[in-house]
Image (tube, rainbow, N blue to C red; front, side):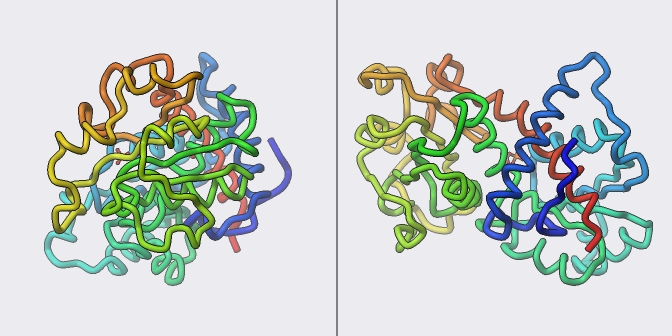
Length: 310
Ligand code: CP
């Protein structure tokens, strides 16, 4: 395991960490990939550490992935889900967290619908805070595992052309991907209907392409986002059927390209909307490798942050 440590006590967003931090997380994740592929998938690294997973919003992948990563590192784990907690009786976020910390918790993994909630918490408590997705802001471990998956598939991230397709406007995954890919030297474009591309996104140094076939011809990797109907207060697209017609990726669309590209998706997939099954389940797709790599990346983040108390 590396001797170095991260430049930060918390992981609140990719915006707030350095390229050196990302390289260190990836090199550490390489060691944990070996661990999770062994018959005995556990190491004692976090034996004295207690971690609370606080999920104020639904999750399948991130919640299970963090819990598995924590257990593989031998941490003690407590899980909190807002829907079955005293939040339903009106308890505030800070009161909830302070009560949990009174039970001597060292690290907090938090998903919350409000952008900035993990940042707020990190200023109030002593425990390390890891953002597991805050509203439409950032989802740093998803950004890390996506770039890490590109590194494992294509050898390196630097110099690669990555297009992020779809509902960029409502996506925390998009922002964390943009920051992570750029720090690692990739070229990034976004593609989607104009209503789902944030105004002024070019100011982040990304290109914008509205024609999906041009975007696919340009890229090495297409990271396809979910249409987030639950965050859309008004109609941004006429219908899901029309979205699929113009922006959905199916085998026919990929067959028109003159070379192979890699297809990624953070999940959950709306099959038949942004991605058709003949692509999602094809050899072009690394969607399940992303999930597998996510456990190793989260083990690396937890392991490295546990060494940072200040
Ligand atoms: N990719 C992702 O964040 O999925 P979940 O919402 O299932 O955690």
